[in-house]
Length: 458
Image (cartoon, rainbow, N blue to C red; front, side, top):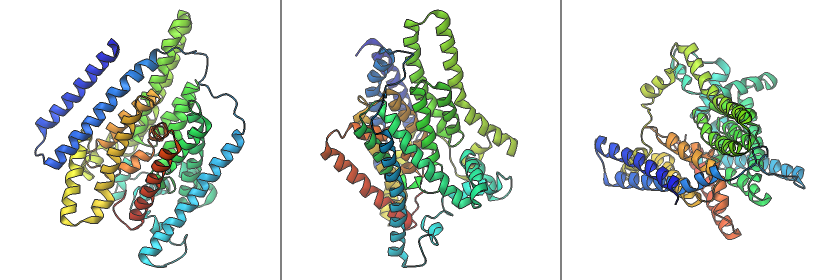
């Protein structure tokens, strides 16, 4: 380990130890199961960061041609590959619809056709889809319960509203947007993977994205498909040296979901590597122009969040009204991610003892399994994975797991695309690939079943 790695590791450990000390001092009460789970999460996350640092510094200083885009090269049969991907994704949409319908019939008996029962099967009135459909139809309001819709960002409802003009129905528009974006996300995931991986491996990246246990949310009118598409487009275009287009996609991601602003982290890594290389080979004026271009493009990503703050201001007179609603209506604020694991574990133990199986299997157990599974997956792949993807996952994990009332961990991680890349890198042989794919499919079927059964899956 060189001196730069040692310094970064020392700083990182200092931050993590300070966070742990603050948590231990400020905690009101700690139980044994909750404390053990929190410590395990802290250890895995800290280990992930330490393993990522050498790969990160090595990537930054590795030589590269600033005028050369990431290698893809011509690919024979790309059109056929795209057709295969589109067909596979569309077939998976049909399979999900049929499987959910079968689960509903098993539970409730026959009560109508597949499309007649679509809203009830997918509980569209009990999840965030209802809020997005309401925003698309009526916009943001300032009275009644609908005023709390301000916590949901506007780009997905805006796209739905535009599509509704042509199809005449907001629900149909929501399904169209989500599934078209899912198909496009699959194609961009493949193309992004091809910058580093062989064709077969890139196809497996697509597969792992869509067999993730909560990937069924890509089917229904929710933000996941659109956010995933914009995230992949952002990284793809930035790595292809089209910085402005990539950062505009990042801004739209930030206008779709608040974690979109975190795309600035991997983008900054890619730009920093380019600038370090440029400094070695370009004259001073050319380097200054390239640096200014990088700075302006990177700042563009913040426009999505700034636009959302402006929407808050226009609707309520307070740019941060969403945070007030989050705190007062949902008791939600950002805190330490390993404390989230603590209270999730305590709720899991409590609901098990009380026999509240619905909450245990719908909320707490899936959240905990997902949190630890993705940490282990990323920990194992940290030395192999593209460094900017690892850093993106680290900040994304801390952000989405940090809320003090986390309900949707599996759904949040469905759009964390580095997980699919990590899964491919950890399954180089067919046996491991089959095992991990089988586990993911089984998890998908079980999670979909409890969702359709009306368990608290959000």
